[in-house]
Length: 376
Image 1 (cartoon, rainbow, N blue to C red):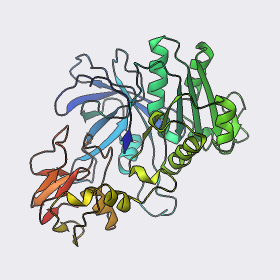
Image 2: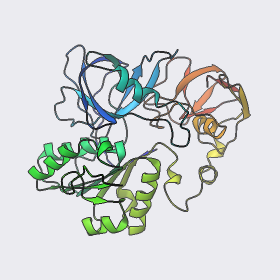
Image 3: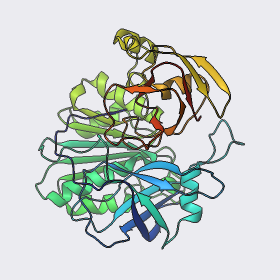
């Protein structure tokens, strides 16, 4: 789920997918690589909000269907000649070493090179920097969650208005640290930019003050020492465990919740310690009154289950039934969760910003209207 209070106009965009070509491929560290995408037609690119993402349509060998994924744009939106995506190679889950690695990220690292063509939808997303504000900013990221923060800090520098910004980043170590030199150069050249990097464990090849600033984790004590107070706009992005810790650190410190903005692909209630679990939150909000329910059939897996009104959408219902369908923004924008609606009909609380293809459904936003069969 995303949350933001920024109120800026939507950037102009194009309809449907547009062909882009990879112009450059740059390794940022051992496991993270940047891909520079330029439009095949050479026409000027529209701007975007710093923090937004691109939705891609990928033809991956061995996959019968087009794979849809989203990746955050990691460059500045100022007069873009290209869109840069900075992508981490995702290994199998730590607790499932025999499971396959990340499908799309490994496809990019292993098969996408200069000259590769990719179908790209226009920049989208609700998590972005409020460029009209002059309130000091703290950008807090973990791992590859730094990608929207790079776009944000670049934008602040490009604006040239002296807006104060802290770029605070945590990662395991130098081998997984991307774009660190770039951020330090920004801080060295711009008095309003300050940075602090935390390595979980610094190796013998790491130089304090050059590669990192402290060892361990981002803690309340560290933030208090660096910031002195909470009179900032906070932007958060990183793995779920990182997000939960940092959100609660800020909340317990007394930060204004309306000034904590985050990119989080999951139920918001899991971020806050002591908040009701997602099913209770749905019941408390009256969500059970929407939708007509019915029997949900997952065609690929052969599973069938009776719809439970406590769920917000078919995606959450599928996950609760042991399935792991692809998903991204959970806001009905990226279309990563789009699957074929084989039988039945669904309802949307709000019409999707980008409608699904005919005969398909965005399961992150849809509820069943009677018996439904979907291709999962």
